[in-house]
Length: 85
Image 1 (tube, rainbow, N blue to C red):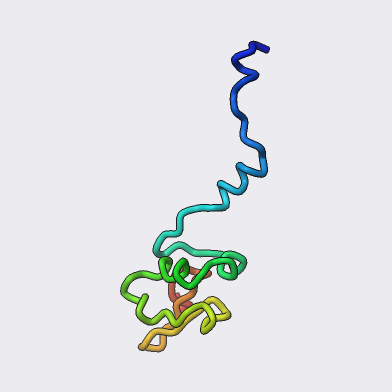
Image 2 (image 1 turned 120 degrees about the vertical axis):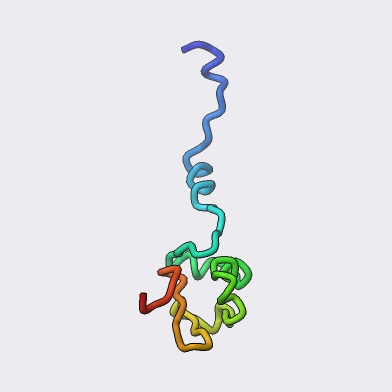
């Protein structure tokens, strides 16, 4: 093995998996129930389309991952859309 190759940086598997788990939150992105529990209200609000953000009551008011809009439709973080769609 050439010496130059031996000096290359190889990330540890644990460090690599942490980097993979920390993905950028985007509007309309579906998340898992575990991610829902880990995210703050501000992070969850970033996932909601702007047209519906004013209706997001906070994480404590949507323990099932859903919240209701003024027209009665339920928005789901797990589907990244309406429950009935």
